[in-house]
Amino acid sequence: MKFGLTARCLLTLVCTGWFTHAAWSATPQPVSLTQAGKVNAPKATPEARLIEIYKLIGIGQSKEARLKAEQLVKDQPNFQLAHLVYGDLLSLQARPISRLGDVQGNLSEEAATALEELHQESHKRLQAMRERPPVGTIPSQFLALSPRNKHAIAVDAARSRLYLFENTDAGLKLINDFYISVGKSGVEKAVEGDLRTPLGVYFIVSNLDPKSLRNFYGTGALPINYPNVLDNKRGKTGRGIWLHGTPPAQFSRPPLATDGCVVMANPDLNQIIRTVEIRTTPVVITPKIEWVPPHKLRADVKPFEDALAAWRHTKSSGNVDALLRFYTPDFNSNGKTLADWTPALRTELAQAKGRPIELKDLSFLRWKDAADTMVVTFGEVASGQQTGPVKRQYWIRQGRDWKIFYEGIIG
Image 1: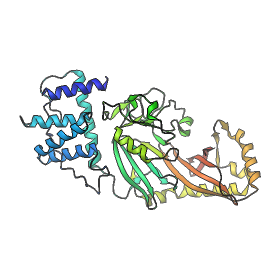
Image 2: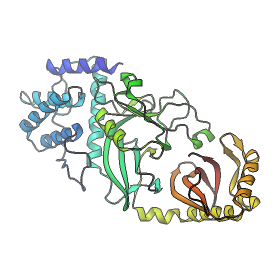
Image 3: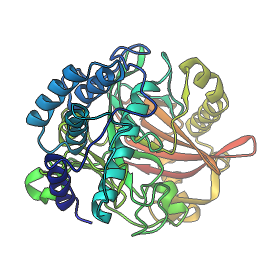
Image 4: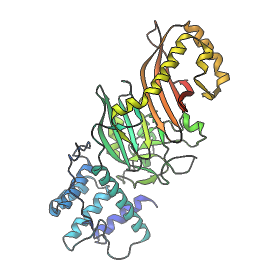
C-alpha cells in the first residue's frame, strides 16, 4: 500500500465526516510536558504540540484542544495523526465519541489499515511521553565514551524511540528524543531483504547529500556500519541501513514500516544531522533499552578494564607469544586470519622496541545477547610519540576471560 494514497484517502474521510472519533474509552491522564523531570523535546515541535493536545483532551478542555489541533494541521499539513485527532475533535462537537478513530460505518481495507497504523503511532508517542527514562540513568551499552564521542544515539525499538545524548564533562546527558519507525518485520536483521532492522552497536559512517537522494528518503540520510564485525562473524547479510527521513507528503510512518532502516520525521532528522558527527557517533539499536545508573556500569565493567590493561601491559613488553594469548583462534583482521596477521604484529612490536604504549581517547560499548562483547576504540600512542593510529577492537567474554576476535586501524 502506498502511504501517499492512504494519506489522501484519510484526509478525504476526515473532511467528509467518515472519521468521527476520539475521546478515549480509557481517558488518558493529563500528560505534563515536565512529567518525570522534563520532556526533552522542545515545546514547539509537532510531537510536543500533539501531546499537549492529548493533555487538553484528557482534562476535558476539548475546545482549546480543537483550536490547537487546527493550528497544528495548518502548520504541518502532512502530519496524518494530527489530522486524525483534529477530525475527532470536530466530531466531538456533534456527538459523544468513545476512542481515537471511532468510525461509524464500514471502511475499506486500505482505510482500516491506515487507521490502525495511526492508532499504533499514537500509542507509541504517548507511551514514550509517559514512560520517561529514570532520572540519572543511561543505556547499559554506554560504558565509557571518550571526548571524541561528542554525542551518542540509542534506539529503543519496542518504544519506537530514538534518544540523543550529549557527552559532557559530567557524563552522558539526554538532550532530546524522537518517534521513529523500524522494519516491517521488526528487528534482529539476519539476511538481506528480511525487512528487519539490525540490533547492535554501530557508528554513523557518512552524511549523504540530500540532492543525491530520492524524495523517498526525505531531507537526508546517515548510513551506519551494518554489517559490523560481529554481524559478519555471525554470517549476517544485507547493507544500506540508514537513519533517514520521510517523503515530503508524509510526516511520519507507522512503527513497523521500513525495509530495515530507522526512519524519522524530517524536522527530527534535521536536528540529528545538525548535531552529530560522522565516524565518532555510536548508534546502539536494541529491542528495549535497559536504563541503569552510571555507577553501576562502572562496577560491572571492572573485569574488562583489567583485561584491557593486561593487554596493554603485555603489548608494551614486546612479548609476542604472551600477547597472542589475548586473541581468539578465529580472530580476523579485515580478512586476515590470526596466522596471517601475526607477522605484521611481530614487525610492529619490533619497531616499538619495548616502549610502553598508551591508549588515548578510549571508549568502549557493550553488547550482550547470546554473547557478551565489547566494542573498543582508542588511539594507540607509543611512549615518546605524540600521535598514533586509531584502532578498534572487538572483544568477547569466554567464561571469565575476555579475548579479542577483531582488531583493525580505523583512522
